[in-house]
Structures are given as structure tokens and as C-alpha cells.
Amino acid sequence: MNNINVYEECPTYNGDIITLRITNENDAEELLKCYSDKKSVLLFNSDNCHGDDFYYDTIEKMNNAINFWKESYKNKYFVRFTIILNSTNEKIGTIEMFKRDVEDEFNGYGVLRIDLQSKYEVQTVIDDILKITNEFFYDAFDVTSILTKAIPEAKERSLSLIKNGYKHINKKVMIYDDYYCRTI
Image 1: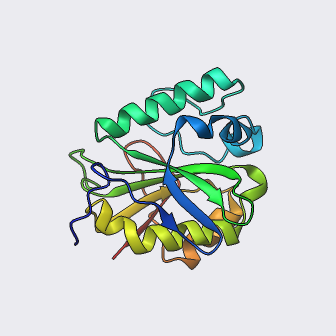
Image 2 (image 1 turned 45 degrees about the vertical axis):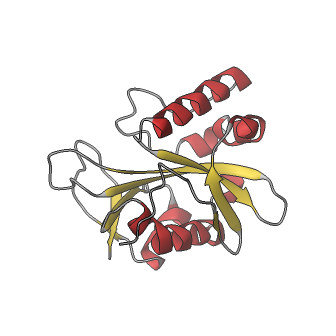
């Protein structure tokens, strides 16, 4: 493990197709396209998010979410990264990552949430996200295993996860199903 602390200085990660950098208030307008996309919202992981389904249909709701994400970052709960398409600079979604601190069999695992605009929910984009997370996030978040969710309807995501070394765990995380795990 290296000495990166994403909560002190959050790096920007560059892939072949996308770039990940910490989400800020200037992203709200473009991210609203993702979070108001009902097809996208169905694939988001809102497990244990206190009833928030991440469907935001106004700029005010989007701004409130970003403010919450920024406050959560300050408190070292999680990091929310904006996914930027390299070819156009379009902000096409976000990912969230954190290390679980819960007394169960998944204590100390990383949790990766991927929120993509539905037209970008394709293997090439997801593969590039996973290439970055597989290379950098184990060290950055001090974890040896990462959990992420893909419901059965998320065919592209499931195929990408398997291709990138994730295995369906066939058990619940807390009370939730459809998790995949990759361990280094």
C-alpha cells in the first residue's frame, strides 16, 4: 500500500475513455442529465442510502446532492468522483467509493457505486472505470476487496464486472442482493 490519502488531496485519474475527478458544484447541470434519466436511476446502487433513490429532476435537487457529497468528503465518509468523457469533456455520471466500517464479514471492504447516464451504460465505458479503480482504488482507500452492485437487468455492467475480475458473491451484503466482489 502507498501513502495516498484521497481525503487530504483527491487525485484525478485518467483512463483511455474517461477521467475521474472529485465532483464539484460546477458539475450540477450536466450531471442532472444522468440523475434525471429514469433508465439510469434503475441501475444505481442506493442500498443503505436512507431512502434516497438518486432521481433528481431539478437543478436544486442536484445541487443539494452535490453539497451533501462535498460535506461527506470533508467528513471522510466517501469520495464522489465525476465521470468525464475524454472525447467531449461531457460529464456522464459519477462513481462513489468508500471503505466499509461495519462489524460484519465485509468489514474493511471498499464499496464502489457507479452512476452512469443510460446511453453510456456500455462495456467500453464501464471497463475503463474498472481499469482505473482496479489500478488505483485498492491503495487509495486501503482495501484488499471491492464490492459493487449490478442488478440482473444491468447486463452490460455485469459482463464488464466479470471481464474485470469481479465475481458474483451469491450472498447478501447487509440485507441487499446482487453484489460482485474483486479481491487483490
